[in-house]
Image (cartoon, rainbow, N blue to C red; front, top):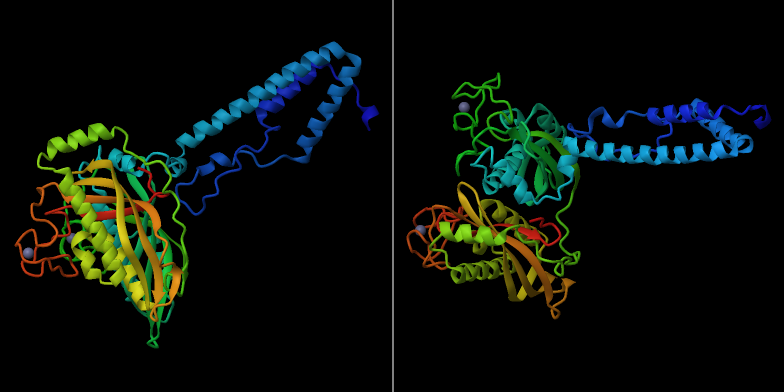
Length: 505
Ligand SMILES: [Zn+2]
Ligand SMILES: [Zn+2]
């Protein structure tokens, strides 16, 4: 076969190789494509340019290689020159392919979301240029409420009532989760809420959240099944809107007129007659993905290693300037008082957890985080287990971030602590951890306070509004005067806990 091939003119060879290279026939598979699936904003058609190499291409390349070898025999000097030019061309070609791949990835909306090297807080800050009222704390509270309401509506087969918040696709995904014999969904509690990614602001603001939750499904024959579910929800909203102030964005109120969510058969609000499209007036859900669900409670007896305590602390960029700004606005702020509050809340929460008495934690937590803590306390109670936390020692508190939005100030601390941490069953048998060796760990805790609040002079033991001994109902209101004391109107309350490995600044 080889002998039948005649040597070609060197110039001819060079031209053919150049044409082949620029046409991409000799392209090695660059970047293999994204593994994300099921996403609306995927990389589009840009990764589907080349559909593999035909056998014809391969033959042409082989033939050219053979030509080149023959050329070495007939015109060795010329062949070496062509070799050099070819090598140069190939290097140039692959470099330019890499550049293209990079510039593509920075333009792709999907990649913008995925490459979350930029801290989440900074992403949210970028949103505030368009919506100065945007508040993470209010958003998280809303998201948790909507999750619970939507699942309960699924149980009653009334998901359509949530059309101002849920897109048709999202409603369909929820409806699919309901078995035909479903009669009710109750006890919806979110155990963990994660921010998966925050998109750079485009015409829409987008954020993906992951829920770990428990709920109880009751079937028509009266049987109850407890589910542990993991779901991803994609939220979006038009960028140029102004977020509503605290207490106004609620998932059971019409986003247009604020009346209770009641719709006419055509989907319009019974009170203002408006048909609200999800995401047009306030946050809406584009898509819901059920990552998985199992009929079980959460796993309480498996040991989770504390990793990350030795990791360097993640400080806010320009922490000094942010701190100075914060002090200027809050002239009354006294650091020792704040640190006492942090330590007090830290110890009270460990106590509440250990004794499984959620009401001990209630005065110190925003609604969203209280719901998650209640979930865990209830989970231990249901499984007749107790997570004992003893000998709690706060070793160090590092202030890592001063944040503010239109309604709240926030301070994030990295708390280094140690404690005895074990789980015992009803008979007192240790089923996880041990009673002797203290566990050392660190976590990032974010505290918020309403910007209207001033430093509380008489913290911790009494209602900051009426002065009565601190007794708070499930809604976080003082049992005597009824004022809500867990929204940060009076003093710092805990709004978020993040593990070392999850905290991005
Ligand atoms: Zn309305
Ligand atoms: Zn009171």
